[in-house]
Image 1 (cartoon, rainbow, N blue to C red):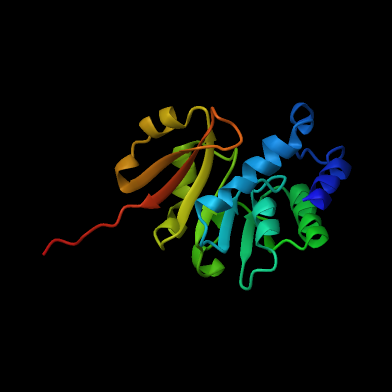
Image 2: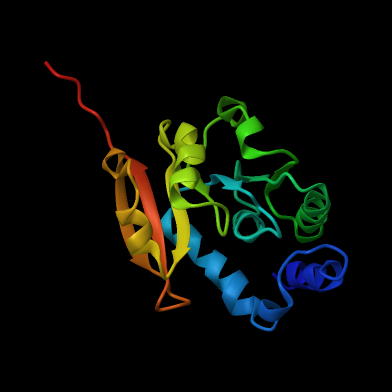
Length: 191
């Protein structure tokens, strides 16, 4: 992870990766916060990170999975400058990442083959995040979404909540924050 943070230091002046105000706490606010996600989907080796931005959580997860046969994190990001950073971060760290320089909506979910988990951090409102993650979740992927302090309110406002099994899990990094682990409900057919 040190090589990844070193890259952030070098690139953040020319590419808007993280805010100046959060850089002082990069190890806890960004790295540790993202690193805790793999424990919430321990069997997952094939991930999709929607709106990867500066690699949170995609590159962090890909670094954790490096060396595991077949492991990959598909980092989807539409900003070309951030994609250049993500490619360099994957190369420099040996992260198990594939960078997709396009919008999430443009990705054909089947083109990524089997996906075990889908994530997004600071990406979109929960309803939109779930809408975009749904094609992978319908095929069995678990959603692992850091949602901060307002997770309970976000779930309460979710009109399609009945379609999902949603677990609210405490962040181990920020006691006020919540991570949602989400699965599609299995629908049973009438006899």
